[in-house]
Every structure is written in structure tokens, then in C-alpha cells.
Image 1: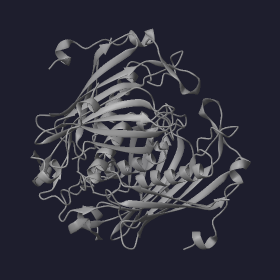
Image 2: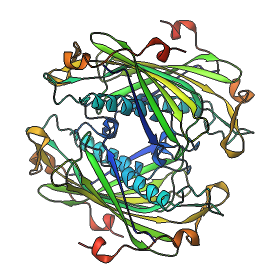
Image 3: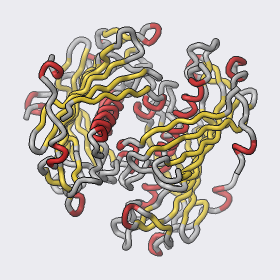
Length: 148
Length: 148
Length: 148
Length: 148
């Protein structure tokens, strides 16, 4: 059972904007990369080729609080914690830390809620239970980790 | 005094992902485009070339709730409403409506809080009062518009 | 029979990078937007929902020459010209002009070659003839327009 | 003296489009990431904080030939080779190989020409000689590597 995952990435030039900092929309890409890496660490792909029937994970809520900017070539750690687990949905919180600072700086924190769906004809999606083999591998993080 | 602005855009291919829908991070780009168009409609640029001293508007909070997917070539209206006005910060809410549906569908709604800053050496930023000529042009939208 | 199309767009903040100019990869997004608008102008979608069997248009070659930078809020006209038409492929050239200059400035020019394909199982694609109803609507631009 | 560099990255969900493959514009982002990593491997940043006067490297030409698609979670190696070195410009060629195939598949190859510039007031740029400390570290790759 897993409730945490961390990735580290270096800010790329194409992720910055004319203000000289990472464009705020990219924090949501970073969150998703951490989420998908978390799934791979459990032996699954978010694009569930090895789950039958195939499920998808559209986002229903996303948010981010920005405390400090990130700049080109900064090293950022994205920590994912499972904050809620329901039959058809998962919520994650994320903490972004700039590692090339002494000590590392919390630059942002975010939240993501995703729903498990099956795909129908014409692109229609319906919420469904999280497949047991996935649900069995994921648990909510201890309150003291999620906490303040 | 203005409190509302609307833009319409057509979903581009490069904004979709392999799930066949607009990638969730792009809703934050759409919000920003509406915000910047709102500023232009008031006679300003968000990159305040015509304000002295120059100010910037980094985001401190962003969120979005997704109700329905957007797909390639969908026409989406982004409605911006000023929801809060403080001496150094503005908050906006956004409603995303898919226009090529009868009737139009609310596909998402979001929120953005931005802070007015001046830039110092080495890229440092400090919060500052919103320049009077901008503040004088912006007001909070009526509660019944924001509400519900 | 059509061989030309023009779109105009305003540079968005999220398209700039820390050098204060439009990131070079975005010119390829602009080209594609012009291409897809050209198709819509002919009554088709590049995602051929109304063609049987459905075809796709993967890119096999793309290039761009950059002459001048584009900046935030610049108005850029993207001119598409059909430069080659083969049974299974189309080539376009593009000229990017900054309109908010007097006279307008040619800031970049590019080229795109796309191949018509049908999709098979497991995502495999095979080149196929351009559907007649599409091919009948497209012709190569006069040499003097493409030229020099 | 260096003339080659390789990076490996895993395709992210946000880099795919509704065709289920990496959007063609992202290959240009991958090239740039390889270029910037190459510079770091030489002890420099492409954003030359440690060079006086500071120089920039705008792109003047970019191209890519696409042979095979890349998909979500594919592992792609980007090989950079210095193909030309002039007093004020560098050209690179790139080979993209999908590593999660047996044997690895060449999926694309590209080319980039960048010019060394100094920045003036109002964002104006002028071509300048590549700083000696950088030029001294870079050489053109052997012809047999650049080859056919």
C-alpha cells in the first residue's frame, strides 16, 4: 500500500514566460507527471493498458497556491500524497520544493481530484469503481503528513 | 468601472491530449487570456508598459472545477468576473461555456487570485498597491452574478 | 479550388519565454492552427468526422526560419500557401507577419509536409490517397506567390 | 572539446495530442532541452549568468523529420551533435530514438541553428562572437557521425 511519491525535475526554458519564471499552468503539468509516476511505481500506467476494462482518470478539481517563483534550471521536487480515497475518486496533495536552495524552499502546494471513468462510444465517459487491483495498492497518507 | 469580460476561442489541436479532450492545464491558459483581454479592454496591458513604475501580476492562487470535457474545434466562451478587489490583489472567477451546444453547456468554472508587484534587482518582487489608474477602472461584480 | 488562407492571432503571455519573446516551438502551433482553419474554410475538419473512412494528417516534415522575434500582444498574421499536392501528401509554406508594425514585418517563414493516413488497430497508420472530396478542393498556389 | 550529448526522457501525458501521439511541436522542445543540457555539461548555462557580457541564443532555423510516432510513456533518447561552428552561430543535428523498442527505433531527426547575440535596450538583439570560453569547449562532430 502506497500513499506517497516524489519526483525531481529541472525547470526547462520552454516552461518559463516573459516574467522570467515558470508559467503558472506548468505546475499542473508537474502535478500530473508526479501522479503518473506514482502509478508507474505501483506497476500500472495511468493509461490502463493492463487493466480490463480500460479506465481513464479525468480531473474534476485542480488547484495550486504559489508562494515563490521557480526559474530556469531550478531543481524542483514534487511530493505527491494521497489525501482522499473514495470508491470512484482519488485526491492528491502536492508540495513543490526548490532543491537548489539551502535549505530547500516550499515554492507551491497544490491539490488534484481525479475520477475513475470508463469510456463509451462517441467519447462519452461514466464514473466507475476504481479497479480493485489499483485500489488495493493505494491508501490515504497519515494525517500528520497531509496536515498543516 | 468594469467587472466583467468575455472572450470566445476555438479549441486547437495542440490543446488536446491523448484522451481526446482539452488538457486540464490549458483551462488556466484560457483564464489568463481572458484576464489579459480584460486589461486591454480597460486600456492597459498586463505587461504595464504604460504604467510608472511598471508592475507585474503573479498568480498566488489558481483553481478549476471541470464538469464536462472540451474537444477539438469546440467553441468556448470564457467569462471573467471580478470577485474581490483589495489594495494589492484582485480575484477573478471564470465560467467556461461550450457554445456549440444547444443550449450552451457550463463545462468548467475557475478562480484566480493575482497580486500586484514591483520588480527589484535579481528578479525579486514585492507586493505593492494597485496603481490608482488601474484600480479606478475595476470594481467587484454584483453578488448575484458571482453567486450560485 | 483553394490554395491560400490567412489567420491573425494575438501573442499570448503563455506563449512567451524568459527571453521575452514567443518560444520558437509555438510557431509550429501557429502553422497548424492556420492549416486547420484552412480545412474548415473548405468545409472539412482536419479530424475528418465527415469523411469515410476517417483519415489523419501526421506531419512528416516541419521547418521554420526566424527573422525577427514576436512579443506579447503582437498581432501576427499567418499566411498559408499550398506549395505541393501529391496523391498522399500535401506541403504548405507559411509566412508570419507582425501586423502591429508600419509596414508589417515578415518575422518568420515555415514549411510543413503532411501525409494522409488511415488508422488501424493498435494505433498503426498507413499512408492513403487523399479523399477525393478534399483533393478536389485544394490546388497548388501560383509559383509567383510561393516564390522568393 | 565536446561535440555530442545525449538525454533520455519519458513522454508525458501533456505532450500527447488527440491523435494519441506526441504533438509535433514538442520535438522542438526536446531538442532545446538537449541543447541546454549540453551547455550545462560544459559548465555553462544557456542563460549565461556566468559569462560577461551576457549572451543569448535565439534560434534562426529549426526543422524536424518525423519517421515514427512517439506515444505516452515511451522512452526517447535525444542525441545532439554539433554539425557546424561559426564565429557567431552554431548548428546542431538531433536524432530521436525510441528506447523501449528492440532494437531502438529512429523516430525522428532534426536540426537547429542558433545565433549568439547580446541584448540591448528595448529588447533589441545583435549577433556577436561566441564568447571564447564557450567556443573553446565546442567542436564540430566527425563527419561520419553526422553522416547520411
